[in-house]
Amino acid sequence: MASNGALDARDRSALLSRLASERFDVLVIGGGITGAGAALDAASRGLRVALVEARDLASGTSSRSSKLIHGGLRYLEQFDFKLVYEALRERDLLVSKLAPHLVRPVSFLYPLYKKVVERPYVGAGLVLYDSMEGTRRPVPRHRHLSARGALKRAPALSPDRLAGAMVYYDAQVDDARYALTVARTAAAHRAVIGTRLSAVGLLRSADGGTVTGARVRDEETGRVIEVSAEAVVICAGVWTDLVHELAGVRAGYRVRMSKGVHIVMPRSAVEADTGMIVRTEKSVLFFIPWADHWIVGTTDTDFAGDRAEPVATEADIEYILAAANRVLARPLTRADVIAVYAGLRPLVDPNVSGPNGAKPTTKLSREHVVDVPVPGLASIAGGKFTTYRVMARDVVDAAVAGFGREVPASVTDRVPLLGADGLVAVQPAAGRLAEDYGVPREAVEHLLGRYGTLATEVLDLTRDDAALARPLADGHPYLRAEVAYAVRYEDALHVEDVLVRRTRLFMESADSGVSAAAEVSAIMGRLLGWSRRRRAAETRRYLELVSAEHAVPSMDSDSAPSLALAAAR
Ligand SMILES: Cc1cc2nc3c(=O)[nH]c(=O)nc-3n(C[C@H](O)[C@H](O)[C@H](O)COP(=O)(O)OP(=O)(O)OC[C@H]3O[C@@H](n4cnc5c(N)ncnc54)[C@H](O)[C@@H]3O)c2cc1C
Image 1 (cartoon, rainbow, N blue to C red):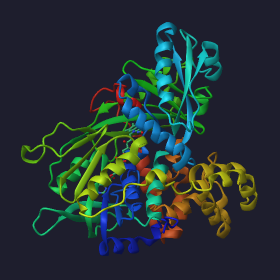
Image 2 (tube, rainbow, N blue to C red):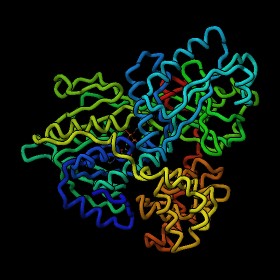
Image 3 (cartoon, protein in one colour):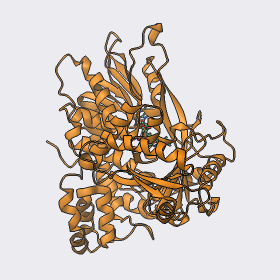
Image 4 (cartoon, protein in one colour):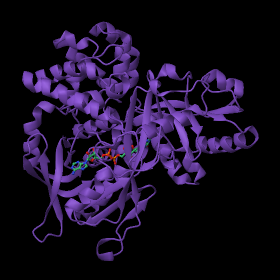
């Protein structure tokens, strides 16, 4: 039943005719982690599923997070034990079974400055955190360090007032790649996944009561098609209110946007062999190891601007630098920052009355909210990346409840993502694969960490075209084959898709991937039949995106940044 889930950008017209001609059980609107999860959940129950994403998979919040799969230590302080327990169970499931190739344990050093008060308090929290893990324990327990021990692990810390530290473990992920892999796994279970397809209206039954599908605009051509489905599921993150509006429904909750900014720095800027989490006045600041870089953040400010392109302000960046410098011996400066990105948290405000003042149908499940505002339509918002699988299950349960026939329960806790199966047998073969394909061993290891067992699919592309075995950008592990793979298997339609999300050169390279843009355009153009003029236009479009991102406003138009509690989401 399951195939390799290839999302081949060259098959777009076939994709569109399938969407327009087939009748689906479930149509998912939105291709972030929640929508991709819902598509996989429904498809693996044997349902006919379609998903439409207005831009690129994970182009919203799901590529702009802190990239942690975690219980959320801070929720313990709020006594939200159930939430932490659920998130830790999900973390352990992903690390050990569903996606060991993508979700990896990461250690965090928590420096202590008030020995007598802090150590027992933080220590007790971590004992609880560790005890909530399942019995398989895929990540190690926390440990206590002396001040000397802390400085050994993190010489970058200022020794002033340092009384000791704790080290605990969570997990991290490339969020965009993870969401893409979930979408591909859904496709492997026969879901039809399409990008640059915006839902612009909902279809209704003759009596106007039931939602029966959606009108969808192809953003590449402007053509509008109708997609029929027994149930439509809205997974539109911070766009949820807008989709409710275009559906003409009033849901039992609204979504509030909160902006979070991260800065990216080279690993050499902060000497430490572990991630770090430090307390700030209102919340915490993470130093997250990211290959040869650090990701440091985040902020939490109300936001009311352009949902599609939230930008960081100088004030956001200065705020993060100042918070980091409170604990570092050598202060970081603006010159250390090679990239900045901003994302929007879709926070739910459930205190909204339902249609005509009636009791809302909203069901609050911990942090996420599921609503069925009219028959045939279910929507979900809130939650976190870590708990996407539970969210997906809940919204699909709500959608199929109206089917009037039995639908199997969710099975995604037993469905490993593409690339996970057989990993243990492929990892030790890295050296042999490197020899067989004539690429450096590090390149194979890099591919295994991004594609799992599908790494050989990427390498196979170099058999036909040896030039694809060459690196894409100097000093970075990405191969040119990954560009071709992104088109043939991962539905990349534009240069941006490859440089921002299929690879992460946009945030990892000092030039934001600009020097690789023409090569990416050339490789994509050969596969997608782009003319010379189109290739140049695609390259230019990417350069314009980079300059827009770099035009950092000096003042925050929304409000002053306040590293507030949601930082640890
Ligand atoms: C700064 C920050 C840090 C975070 N860190 C973490 C973390 O470390 N760990 C964690 O667990 N969580 C974290 N989160 C939370 C997590 O990232 C989000 O909860 C999650 O990514 C939301 O995913 P989503 O699919 O609901 O929304 P999105 O990823 O935004 O997806 C919604 C999609 O819907 C599409 N869409 C909208 N309208 C339409 C339409 N009309 N037709 C078709 N498609 C449409 C959009 O284009 C978009 O791609 C963080 C969030 C932020 C902002």
